[in-house]
Every structure is written in structure tokens, then in C-alpha cells.
Amino acid sequence: MSITVSELCIDRSGKRIVDHVSFSVDDGCSLSILGPNGAGKTTLMRALCGLLPYSGTVDVDGERLDRLTRVEAAKRIGYVAQDMTALNVRLSVFELLLLAQNSHRVSWRTGSGNQDAAMEVLSRLGLERFADAVPQALSGGERQMIALALALVKKPRLLLLDEPTSALDLANQLTMLEAVHRYTREKGIVTLSILHDMNLATRYADDALMLVDGTRRYHGATAEIMTPERLSEVYGVTCRTLSVDDGAYTAIYPVNVRRG
Ligand SMILES: Nc1ncnc2c1ncn2[C@@H]1O[C@H](COP(=O)(O)OP(=O)(O)OP(=O)(O)O)[C@@H](O)[C@H]1O
Image: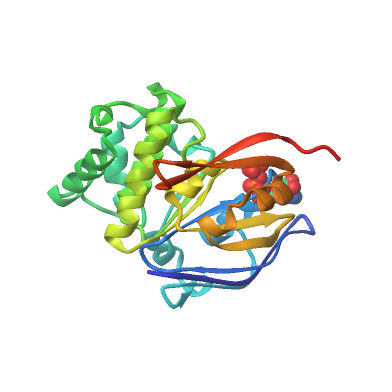
């Protein structure tokens, strides 16, 4: 699986929100989409899963996204939105996992294969204890993890995650992103994640795309993009980098907001 986005432009209410953005991601790789609030990250992601009209081209595994039917696109793409209202139904997590595998079909019957896949994804994410729970009775962070399970159980070729760790505690941030990272490599899919946490981006994304005012400011290998100079320019924050575990990780420490 690979994705190539060329000259993507998106207008909302007559205003250009994403302006000629291009990038590509190879199979088994993950890209973090970064940038200040309002930069156009969610708008870009919603267009990539067919929820917003755009100009330019998006090729998913060599096929034009706008030429796929809704069903074909739904089979290939898994999307975890910031807003999780889709979970406001009176079904258990396990039932939702069965339903998600058939969401592109008009009529369906669940087989043991569907049930195995549901259990497998819960086990991969360490969420077996929630199988019988109703999402409405879960906490915000627990619901966010269930939303990820629902996207993965569809076996997407392109996984789109909009701030997937915004409600998660420290341990769950690492557990979920580690699981996504492993899944992306193992299945040769492509994962795009909108992240505000620079340390999670440096740790789990191969490449980074930095948007500013709807345009591509920087794109490339995460380690090359995440320099104090660039973070200062894009976010207006003075940052220092710290080498952790003899250079195994580079941590980013935000010192202060630059004035002026
Ligand atoms: N339906 C709309 N009509 C007009 N403007 C919109 C619409 N949706 C979004 N925008 C504008 O587009 C810009 C980008 O919004 P978007 O949600 O893509 O930003 P973002 O980078 O994801 O921000 P955040 O980090 O805060 O989530 C914002 O200025 C927003 O006000």
C-alpha cells in the first residue's frame, strides 16, 4: 500500500483551507501531520477519506481515490475522527467490532472469522476487558481506544488517525501508538496521524508533514524535520532537544513561547 497526494486544494465556505499540498508515503510507513491549531490538518484528513471535496489527485495504491466507489473506499480506509459520536449506540464493543467488519455490505451474517478478528484486534490493543462493555458507559480515553479498535478491525490499507492519543494517559499513549506502529509495519499499510505531541511524533512516525496556514512548510524524515529551529519558526516556541538512552530517542523540551 502507498499513497501519493498531489497538489491537493480544499476550499470551505469559499475560503482556501488546504493549498497545493503534495506528499507521498510508502508501504509500511507512517507519517505524522503536524502544525498549529487551524493549519488545516483535520480538513486534509477528512478529504483523504472522501468526506470533503478537493482538487488535485490522491492515489491510493495506484488507484485514484475519486474514482473509487464509496464501498471500495470504505474497505480500504480506516478513520478515527476526533469526534466519537459514532460510538453513541446501545451495542457492546464486541457487537460493534462485528458490525464494523460488515459496514460496507448491505446485508450480512457474522461468522466465526468475524468473531476471531474482533477478539484478535482487542488482544492486539490489550482491550479484551472491554468486549462486553457499552461504549456509552466508558471513559473518554477508553472510548478513544475502542474507536481505534473499530478502525483496525476493518483491516484498512490506509489508516487515518486524528489526534488518536488526545484523551489517553501516558501508558495508553505508548501502548496504542506502539501497536499501530507494529501493525503498520507488519501489514505493509500506510498510517497518517495528526499529532500535537512532538515526542510521540518523533518516536512513532517515520516521516513528518508540517502544515502552516494550509500549505506544506516542511516534509521529510521525522528526525530531519523536528529541529528546534523549525519548531521555533512553525509554533513560535523555543525548544531544546535532549538525547535519551545514548541517542536511541531524541526528546523535545518546549522552553517557552517566543515573544514578538
Ligand atoms: N466548514 C468550514 N467552513 C469554513 N471554515 C472552516 C470550516 N471547517 C474548517 N474551517 C477552517 O479551516 C481552518 C483549518 O481547520 P482544521 O480543523 O482543518 O484545522 P486543524 O489544523 O485540524 O486544527 P486543530 O489543530 O485546532 O484541530 C480553520 O481556520 C477553520 O476555521
